[in-house]
Image 1 (cartoon, helix red, strand yellow):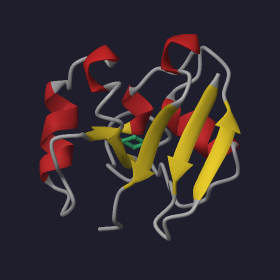
Image 2: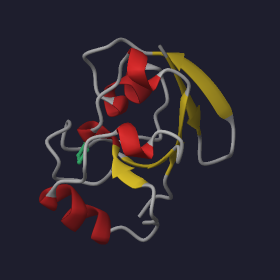
Image 3: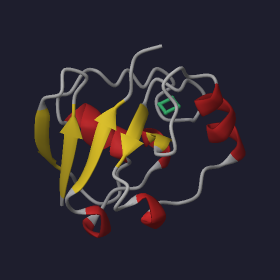
Image 4: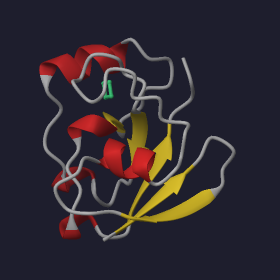
Length: 104
Ligand code: FES
């Protein structure tokens, strides 16, 4: 399935992602180094913050309490903010576009 990633410079990159990985892992393994993912995906750093595609927002799992707290600590939160390590990827998300959030 394809994931479209918009970098902080506004460049669009299309990445082929495997089911069973998180959106954070797909972005990182796709060679985009703007996602630091310092905590390795255990929902404790917020350096994997992205803005998700409004067209797919309803299909994603709801925001958990830890994720919500961490997003509150970021400067670039909006209605489509998510921590990409908490988002599954797979065929159901083919063509989803995510924009990497501003660095805090
Ligand atoms: Fe740390 Fe997502 S990688 S919160």
